[in-house]
Image 1 (cartoon, rainbow, N blue to C red):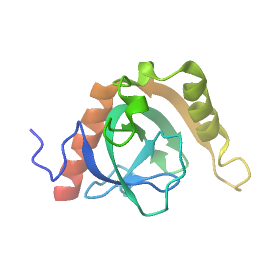
Image 2: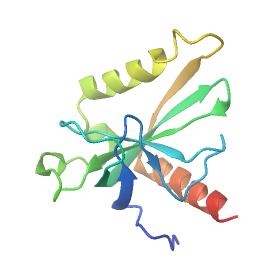
Image 3: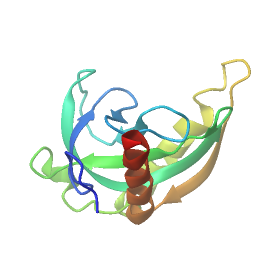
Image 4: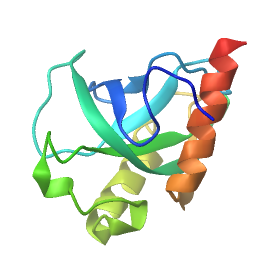
Length: 138
C-alpha cells in the first residue's frame, strides 16, 4: 500500500514543465521519476496540475532505463480527458507522436541515444511509480 502524500490514481503535485517529474520519487537513473502530462494547453513551467496516471513509455538511454510515466489531467481540471483511463484509450496518432518525440529528441546531441521499447498499461506504470516512491524513502 502506498502511504504517500498523493494517491496513484490522482497525483496531487506533478510539475507541468516540458517533461514533468514527480517529487518525492527516485528512479533507477538517480533522478525524480519523469511524468509526461498530456494536455491541450500551454502550462507555465513549475506549475502544478492534478492528473491521473494512465500508462508508461519504456525507454533506455546512454544512462540506462529511463521510463516515462504518462498521465492526463483529472476531469475537474480538463473534462475532455474524463474517458482516458488507460494508455490504449489515447488516440493512435497521439501515441505515435509521443513515441516519435522520444525516439528523436536526442538525435543532435553527441554521444546520446534513446531506444524506445513500447507502451505499458496503468498497472505497469503504477508499479514503477510505487518503486520510485520506495527508492526515495530509503
